[in-house]
Amino acid sequence: MGCSCTKKRVTVGGRRFYILKKLGEGGFSVVDLVEDDQGDKFALKRIQCHSPEDERQAKKEAEYHCQFKHKNLIPLEEWGSVPGQGGASEVLLVLPLFKRGTLQDELDKLKSKGDQMSEERIWRIFRGICEGMKALHTAKPKPVAHRDMKPGNVMLTEDDTPVIMDFGSMGEARIEVKGRSEAVALQDLAAEKCSMLFRAPELFHVDSHCIVDEKVDIWSLGCLLYNMAFLQSPFEPIYARGDSLHLAVLGRNFKFPENSRYTQGLQDLVSGMLVVEAVERPSIDWVLTKATEGQRNMENRI
Image (cartoon, rainbow, N blue to C red):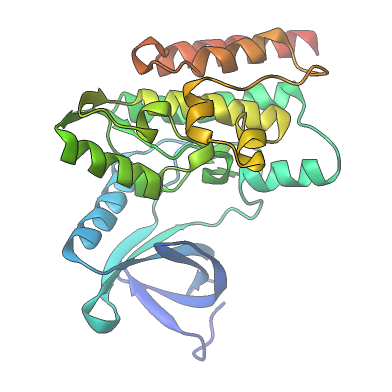
């Protein structure tokens, strides 16, 4: 038995888990390392809910986990809810533990060593991410958008398979905005849940009458692919200088390093995704096709 009765215990989905230590903390949740009665370890995400709407959103996140069964989308072991303090509640998600951490952790290690990821590995990992994204964008009965794609939301398995995580920003892909109040509400939600350096242009300033769809993820994938190659978001230098990130995004104000070690095909794919007008942005099918071609080309060169 891997557990001790002195450890704090929580029951989720009829299973007992023992809290070992805190792994991380965000604005809306805490993640703990836990183990079950067999000594198997997991990550327990505890989402603090301060209103019925908070609880509804957290339960929706759990439902999205249950909806998808795909090797590039993080599965859910168990989930449930418990009363919190002061009338609040907590929604508990028991998730697999990925010992290697996130893609961002991997990129940080490379940067600290002055190294970069090989192009073959970039294509392979990126293709897996696109496979997971396609499952979301082609979901039935309605497509789903992630809306916070970034290296920090991609876990890596022991065999280097990417697994998309953090479904808290996820929702139905197609949002019809009718009026200024709805536009402001969506803009505020994006500011709260969509990381600025990977956020699509249409989410910085939402028009009063428009449709926002899954193309937000295509923009984020463009930023993510650039980040994998050059170890920073394409708009990070502008943000670091304190200049307007919104204006830089609207002006598509980024450039590739002159001494890039990567093929023109990789840079062309980044450029093809970072298109300001959402209607002109490609679909995930197009991106996945290009990623598959890029991976195949690199394998033929090795």
